[in-house]
Length: 568
Ligand SMILES: [Zn+2]
Figure 1 (cartoon, rainbow, N blue to C red):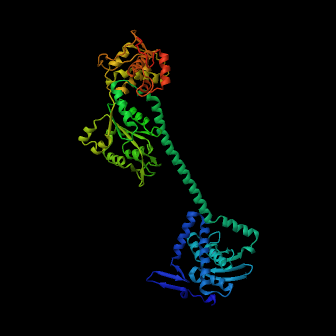
Figure 2 (tube, rainbow, N blue to C red):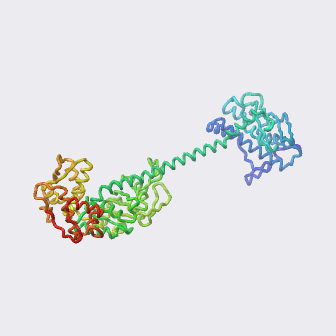
């Protein structure tokens, strides 16, 4: 068969019922040439001329390469010349423009190709003129790609076509020249290698690689943010722990009863409900439970249910995904997730909004949750310690608190006694706070006025330990010498307690004496025992050696068999 005899309709197989058109065995579709022109325009405006040229040359290259293999299979051309001519003929009858081969020199053995052709009615030149007007460069990119692909497939080596005149840049007709690599000058070869180096594939790969980099950067940034969130929690924990473990001291019956309960439940993973008036130190009790549990080296996360930012409650509790709502520019971990493997302290649980209570309950029952704006289920292992100064049963009966959540929380209630029931503990607490605020404000308080001590022990303390702390803070701030004078609001509520301090008869009570008296009291309770369970060191949360050196310094006699006497 002569390639010149190829007819479009002979090669077409049209099945209108099936919606298929096959041309020399390959599926085709009818595309409006104007639409292809618009695509070209899109490519140029989106990627710039160089990249658009690259894409369309490669598009043509693939089409030419496929056509070469398909026609060889169908017609089994007798000569390479015929096979090559068939390409020009196919391009023409497919409607892209009329190609005429001007010159063709082929050495099949040496895989050497040289040829040129003209093209009339180039659809590309028409499109370009319509959309952009007369250009400065040749524009028949698909054509040169097609010719390169077709001839490369036939020759089994790289053949490269360029267009040296083009109707798209104002020439009379389009003219292309092709050469195999072996015939090219070093300069042309280098130019081609550079062109190949700049091909779209590579650019895409480079662009994707830089996207990958960016994604990695973002991932690192996100991990960094999350680690900062965790660090904040740890620092909060550290700060308060360092300051306030000493506030967990007392020898009063109420305090000791409470500590017995804490000791019983701390080591379990049970949910604890800490009950008590405002300011009694329920948060310290929660910390103590955490400190005595197997989770002590894991996070202790505080969530104040009464101070959750309105509208962001769920995000605070469960966290949110990036873009979950306006302003959610980063993924944020919720308090539950931050507390994973540790303890979550839900302060003021009675203030939790009703709609959040439902989600809470589900989380507590299943240990599962979803971040706001996310659809992935996360599992957490969190020990819950909740606290409230409200009467939850009453809130339940009023419909403000879910009964099922109340029963879920109220498994082990721990009652924190108010300060007025712990008058004997006022001395160590005063000592602790004076020491704390002296360090904070750079003061050197050495003594307390006897009148002040009487006031402290006689006052009703409606605000409990927190009020005591504030009173001492103010007094330390206002003190202008080494003596602390305490003012209390309102009339004295109580006469001086039975357990009142029995120390110096002078007007001033040295702080050392307060401490001495307190340590003696503790030793009385333990029968002089310092170490071991129920020993003075345990009650005071001190190392036995530290306690001994303190007793020695204060001149307090001690020893298991020795009788403890009051030094006054
Ligand atoms: Zn052209």
